[in-house]
Amino acid sequence: MKVTAGEPFTVELPSSPTTGYRWEGPSANDDVELLDHAFEVAPDAQPGDSSVQRFRLVAHTPGHLTLTFTLKRSWEPEGVEQHEVEVDVE
Image 1 (cartoon, rainbow, N blue to C red):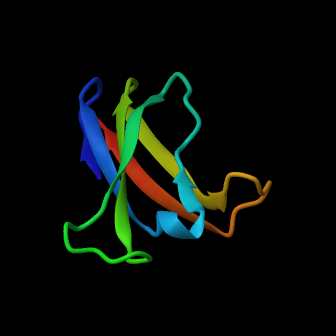
Image 2: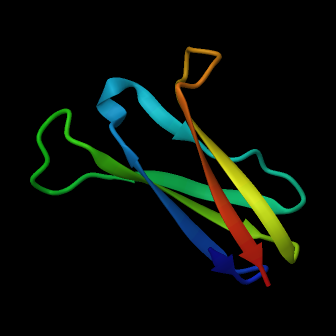
């Protein structure tokens, strides 16, 4: 994924929030900042249907970043899955 430094960009991951599992975004640091995140459920979705979890971020420094997202329940210390997103910041 290519983005421009200082401009917000979005990462979308499939999610089923009713199961208790949610993606945790990358930790904020000098290179990237998490602006917000939200779930989008289809208007005709039934309980338990999948949705999309959107993360809006901004990269501050040009270069290459690997953003790691972890799928976990908030009360559990370990996640069950990780997803990495490679980002080239211009």
